[in-house]
Length: 470
Ligand SMILES: *Cc1c(COP(=O)(O)O)cnc(C)c1O
Image (cartoon, rainbow, N blue to C red; front, side):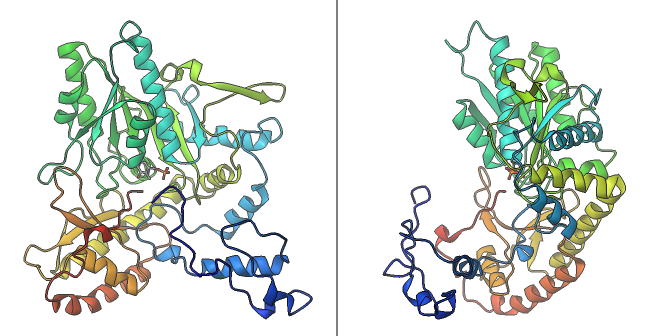
């Protein structure tokens, strides 16, 4: 399908359906003003009519709270909503006009630098973004520019830069490599290893490697990649060959889980080889979409020429971003959430999500119909497939049947070299309560006898697969 081209009009005449009630003053007016779908209407509509038309169409969107596919926050407190409404008119880039919003962004960066154990939180640098995708683009650009500076004699004339990562990386890294002309060196999955391992990462590095991406944790199954082991393998590589390859940690989800629940896990700036980290404020940072964060260990990791300056109280405010204008509301909501929860609050929220994920994984295991790939004990996320003896239904059937009950659970096939494996994935987020999890298991248990009675998997057409690698 071409970009943003709809599959055609839902109605043959290409117009929205109206109703006599939509005529504000003149009831008959509501029957005559049928606006077209795909052409700017000739004239205006009363606000009530326009609102009702848009509102009614959106009723067919799924219920976001039952969306077990997304990592992105679907519930915040009303107070956060009020603050966001108060700030929706503020442009994040207008640092001079909205100096307090700019200050809240700086405080968030300082809090994250401290949370991620930057050697000196006062000198760590970072910025807010629209999400992890933009943060990863910025981090990748910094890696590429640093490599280019070190290799000015060979680049761009002869050498082609590459980035080493697992095949399980989120699609934003494929985008980065495509947009910025970097070769993606992907380590395939193998057997029961569904993410990057240290030895394969080191083996793929050469003098043109701009960095290694380690993911905390993988969107495919919620597992943490072994960041410390990857760093150790690269230390050994440096000792052997002199190659000094930096690591970027894509902590889109895990960088807001591990600091609270896995304090003994060393994955962050405590590892000298970790030069930058990103996270999605709108995932386990617990803010509505779209906010993300990118941080560098120190100014040395972020080439100065990538940073632009905007006017700020008559002075210079450095910015590093792909966008220019973007809303300030999400950054304010992030600061609110940091202030509101503190470390203890975050720990309680994330522990609840992990407990629910682990409990749900166990109950799914107990049905006997499935095999768990992960158990929800890293990210509060787990993936499972059908048990080996199940041949009459598959994960796509389960996903489709759960949807009949309102549950959105993605089913998808793994990448190389495990294309033979198809899984379901459940993401437990704040707001997916133990009560909802119990209702989910009830619905699944009610479906299983029907699924077991099938002759064969229904969904033979693989083009019906869903994939939610976000
Ligand atoms: C979600 C995700 C991304 C992309 O983040 P957005 O905030 O959706 O742009 C990148 N990497 C990983 C590991 C993710 O989980």
